[in-house]
Image (cartoon, helix red, strand yellow):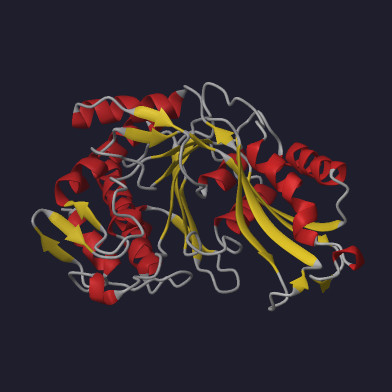
Length: 379
């Protein structure tokens, strides 16, 4: 008989896998799935532990579906504000407390248990089942899923569907799933002026003053109206700095950082061009650096999304709402493989907070939903 989801979630929480550390979480998962016929490959890069596992199906034409997730968690923060030890899983009043309980060790445990139960009943499914697990999702996302995906794509590995275990639910398990995410693009600008004495402004050029109209335009421009799947593109100025440490110095340099969360109405290159057009229109002398954190992706109605919606309805008697709101996830990297990607996991109300927790009553239903999705897609 397979272990229940609660027991495995506790074992995972007890490992203090603060990003990018894994602390044995992946080994624990591998020990559970390898005897089921999975071909497991460790894909560690630099300081990040990853593994890729695949159980080939009976038909090469049948879908390849993977579970994807991360074993790393954010730091616990102020320990004095935790009602329990964040790495000593504790059950209180129907909830399991611990760092990573919701984000996303409960999902990892449910994936493993769902897989065990599915394969015990259907040992030779038509479709292939895989796992792509990293310890670098909460960190800089340099050596984790993105590098595993690049390696798999160079091999020609096919992935048709991916269930990412991010905590997608809002108030009840399965009430919200993510069927896409906005793109994320960050820019860093340094505007150059001429430093001088505040009493002699005609002998200086205030880099901050020169930038104000451009900042206003960036902050208030309507980039697009969004579309049926995505809200309008947003530009937020997140950091600004000027000055030389004294109140009588005109700043000769002004630096600011901004971030776009953009819809499929935009492209990263198009946004870069629009920003530089604004800076140039205001006759600024500047340097700019960019980082594309992820392109937008969307999984329209199809086999995976339909299977998720139907499985949630059948297991939890609940209608679900597909959304693209929120931040980014590793789903953006997997989507590059041409895969349908859906994020489905527990309630996200306490993620990254002190006293992070997950409802014990949601653990077995989550595994049951995952199992039902496998039955609908791989048989």
